[in-house]
Length: 97
Image 1 (cartoon, rainbow, N blue to C red):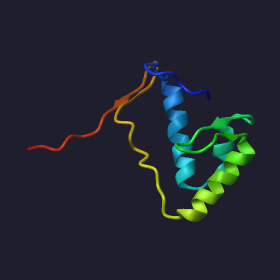
Image 2: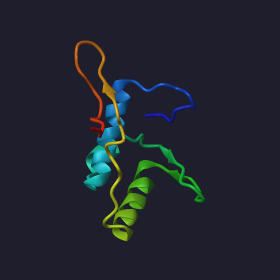
Image 3: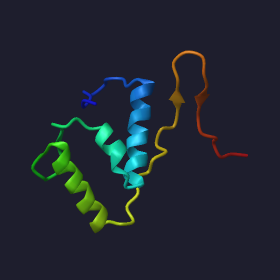
Image 4: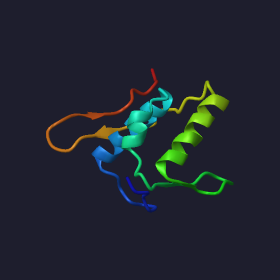
């Protein structure tokens, strides 16, 4: 999966891929993590030099999990998920009277 440019719209499949990547991160499960990254990926973190390659990124993730064992991504940030073709759209219920 390549990075997106500002304003570029993602497909429903790409949204689902990001959600499953978040799920795997939260579960500290690296099989999906590997599937969602290219072998020669470049990861850019704020105020850090780039990480080159999935193996280095995996080591970085393992160190992160060890340092922050209770970390958890807010993984239901996808307020509306719309599928292509015949299907369903889902939106959150809103509080109110």
